[in-house]
Structures are given as structure tokens and as C-alpha cells.
Image (cartoon, rainbow, N blue to C red; front, side):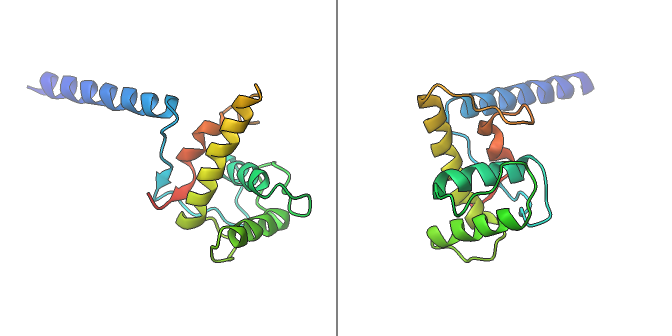
Length: 139
């Protein structure tokens, strides 16, 4: 009986993992509902995703955050400007509403990079397509 349950769980896990890979590979990935907010003082891949997407969306030299994965004052200014341009509350925090808008910008950026024949790899060795795993969203 235990063997059948483990086999069923393993098979279910394999099916779910395959479905996730197919969804991501087809460009239909959904960002992470319930992911923690990204705020000033944070660092890592999620911050990098925010920086790349906001800079791409704004396309303005006055609002540029060096994509280094550190959420400092420069990134805070860019996030607030991004929020303003998207009709969002300008609190400088990347919560579900801002995260959803950023995920859409990431998807546009990925398409632009691919169309130009460029690489979508990041300094973490993780492609931008994986930003969906770390951005908080509404759905």
C-alpha cells in the first residue's frame, strides 16, 4: 500500500513538474501569487528582475537603476517612477500590484531581447524568464 502511494505521489509530481516546464517554455508562465514584497534593503534575483523591467519600461536616463540586485535609493526612485507611470500608489514597494505590472514589463523585455537575438541570462545564471518565480503578483 505504501509503495502505491509513493508511486502515485512520484507520478503526480512528475506530471506537475512537466506541466510547469511546458507552461514556462511556452511563454505562458504566471508570476508568483503570495511571493514576499520586494522593498528597499532587499537584494538578489528578485531585485534584479525589478531593476531590469523598470529600466526597460521607463527607458529614461533620469530614472535608471544599475541592475546589480541591490535595492538601494536609486532603485527606490525607479520603482516610484514606474509606479507613477503605471497609475499605482508610489510607495516604492514591489507588492502584488506593482509586481504584476513589472512581470508584464519583464515579458515585454524578454520578447525584445529574443527578437534582437540577445541573451536573457542574468548574473545569477538564471534566465529572466524565471522572474515569474520571485515577483509578487495579484494573479
